[in-house]
Amino acid sequence: MNLALPFPHFRIPFHRPVDLRVDVDPSATDRGDPLALVHERIHTPGDPLHGLPSFGLRDPRFKVHVREVDGERYAYVEDMDRRCLAGSTVFNRLVEVDRRADRHLRSPHSRFLPQYQRQGIATAVYDWALATGICLMTGARQSPGAHALWRNLARRYESGFAELSNKKLTYLGIDIAPGDLERLETRMFLLPAKCSLPEFCEAVGMRNSPR
Image (cartoon, rainbow, N blue to C red; front, side, top):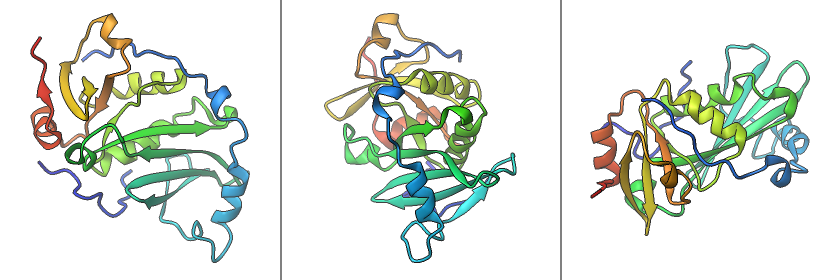
């Protein structure tokens, strides 16, 4: 399987979905996000955030600054015209999986200011991450915005559902029962374009459901 082991250096690339549970209100968890401070650090010589690798989006207003720390990848989206950060996405490691799956899987979480939402910015960042070979998996909960984003991405990337329990993954299929969707152990995954489902299952040690 030709997945990134470990993650590659930053490259600049430019089924029918089912509903996932939506039980997180971003406004309740993201108040006070210090985007202005992060933007200042990005433009402060000598700061660890200064001089990060970056790439542009199709909309020339935006530049994405990327860093990797302890296997987690951060993407800061800058509005070059307004000289501010529109938001950010972090591709977190999943503490719930074993070391084998941890080499391939990351769970993205995005936070964008209201005026930059629903403009396809987060989608472009996810496209970039998938193009580098990362396999994406949802966390235990999703915000309404993340829920819609994953549904849209599932139209273009191979996707499916898995049960995550005791650090092991069990494949549940493309379509699952509504009751399974409500379980916190149920996770959705998205695969890079060059990764097949059998390759993914082998790489992360995912078993088939006995049901």
